[in-house]
Length: 375
Ligand code: 2IP
Ligand code: CA
Image (cartoon, rainbow, N blue to C red; front, top):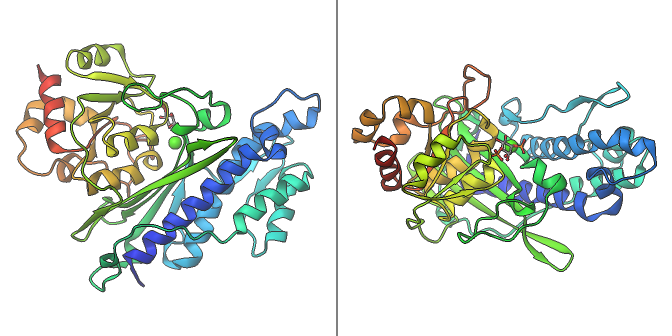
């Protein structure tokens, strides 16, 4: 089946906002928040289910995205994958499969079984799962043209329902550093939905939703970003390509050796959230996100990778590049074609990006980094 790019992208944006609604509800609604953040409580059963609830929030969002995209685009069914499995064993040893049922009532019924009969929490979640969410987006009309049709049987989807789970659960708020990058807190949380070509593995379409973008009073408003880079169509939600910043964003667990080397040439910022750091490069808050270790997965990088590609940047394999730095620097082609991360096949460690990664917003910024690393 052919789908037009505009309706496919709009469907991903809509379901990313539904995911953000669920994530915000779990923080806003007292019955849900209590389960989520492991508040000190004397009711033993809450402790027992707290672990389930954290996983449940993740799993429920992932299943919602799978259910919505699968029902709109049936040829995707079986090719929509994510971080979480929808079958998990609660701390009572019961194996539970989280499914989105046809009706809100049936979904609430199923969820209350996972939540030890807490029907009010289940109802609140089911309400968000079944709510119709259509969000205004700035998708250009050209993506509606007949020359922008996508064969849906060539597309796979990677979902990270809540990236930076640690900040989501216990995020302590912090103010932005001098580069407007938040080192920690709820702003580092992102919902990541990426579409890739099942044959070549190349990322094609990415939506990154930031559920906690703006705090007004005691509630949060989110925002989202999108990028398309496929079949010769290259568009995104940014008004202009990012300008150079000489800033590099890093994981808090990056090696000292790499940090010492980079510090000679760049300003370094350590922030939480793999998705958030990739987004910071796309937003032009940093030129580079470099990660020397295999601590991210296909679901972390696919969506922001597609956005970076649409900006003329990309995400390439750190280890391979470091092994042949001079060759890579001398390469005259598109670095993405030769060294880019691919999403259709497992590597030595499953779906882990085991070679680490270098995310860049432009070839110029990548070359500047490679020159510094070589010196
Ligand atoms: C995590 C999350 C962490 C990141 C880790 C990801 O995903 O993005 O922030 O570690 O690599 O897998 P770091 O903070 O060092 O970048 P999740 O939160 O979905 O498990
Ligand atoms: Ca993640």
